[in-house]
Amino acid sequence: MRRTNVRVRGRGFAATLLAAGIVAGLAAGPAAAVDSIREQQWHLDTMKAPDMWKSSKGQGVVVAVIDSGFQLSHPDLAGQFLPGKDLSGLPGGIEEDKSGHGTQMASVIAGTGKGLGGQGAYGLAPSVKVLPVKVKDNGNAGTTVNTSEFLGQISQAITFAADQGAKVISISQGSVAGEATAADVESLKTAVAHAISKGSLVVASVGNSAQRGNPVEYPGAIPLVLGVGAVDRNGTVTAESERGPQVDIAAPGIDIYSACTASSGYCKGHGTSDATALVSASAALVWAVHPDWTGNQVTRVLLNSAGKAEDGAQRNDAIGYGIVRPRVALTEPGDPGPADVYPIQEQPVGQPAPSTSAVPSASPSAPGSTSAPAAPSVSASAPASVAPVPPQAGGGSGSGVGVVAGVVGGLVLVAGLVVVAVRRRRRPVTPQPQPQPQPQPHPHGQVPPPPSYGPPAPPSGDNPYAR
Image (cartoon, rainbow, N blue to C red; front, side, top):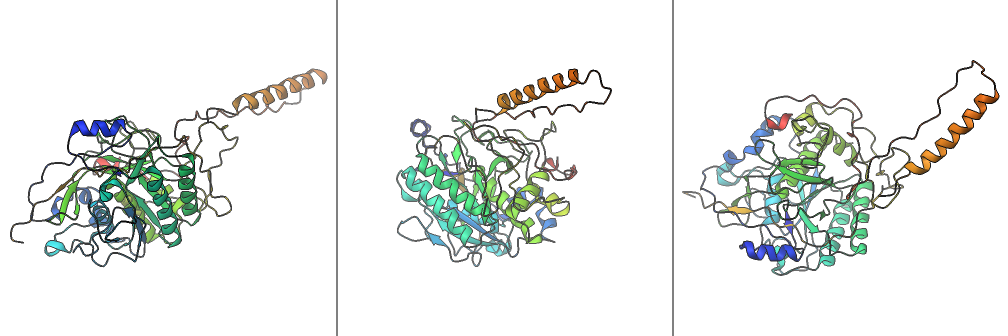
């Protein structure tokens, strides 16, 4: 995941940036040379991509990637891009990707593997079309980017992508809570609600700083955004993947080979950025088979079919509702539920808990609650640590419970007086309604019960991602 910060290579400097609310990912060491990038893409094999590709490669789906820039001519990505938009204001335009981050994310989603004689980097959804949207972050600007400018460009990018008909809006970028104004956050929430009302699905990384304070990051923690954490080959959350109620789902985020702007043309990375790209691609695979579904329905199916934790819990703060399993979502999607209801209920801090179980709506008339916690700070998410592959040989705290309890208590008292007045009539008395327990609010929105409209897809034990 990339933040608005310069790339640094020293732990001391990284600590300084953290103190300033800006976190950077340290670069990994060089990777060993390989003859085939595809053979190194363990995540595709674990997720059973070749089996899924028999029925879906994401055909007909547009995925917007909001990032640092894009090498449109890379052999694995040529022909995959639609005309996009450059919001960065930087020289070089959308095709210049100084950090290489945007190129990587596009590759993880839509790479065709045409490089290296057909042994290049494949994306999980190689038939999607990518709508590239470039924003300014510290990686491509070469300097610290103003928080308001960064979040403002993210908001503009989300709105643009939704208006262009993008089904999935993938954001492997983030801003650490603490420095943005309330207006910045409101603008971001408005853009997300607009996208949801258009039927889009907004996916964003939660951040790579679990070991450096675990700061909340936006847009990943914004209500109506599907927040993504990262897991390793064994399905265990990675040490760097941030924890918290903002985590809705997880995906592979370690040793992810992809196309990039390095001299070899390929890199190996890790982080919630890659995981976000894989969740976005998973959504595209499902959407290609169910083109009439809305983003709410695709989200619901992805969550219901996700592989759960070993203890069987419906969700936890490490992997959310589980590890994404697009193969199960394709073969046993279950009931997608209502088209206009976002499946995850958010409970803003500082507001009374709702008296009903209604969840935010995605209809234009009711785009859903977009309240969020206190304004965040910047820190355009640092790139998942990336290592170039050498060239190939030969080529609300307030709850309504007290009020409801008082009202119900009064009703019970009145009912008691009535019973006395009728002098032991043997007519059965209907029990008075009891107040429903309200979930406790937490810093980034109330986590609801499992968003299922039918029995969850049964797990299959063929790999750690199938629990």
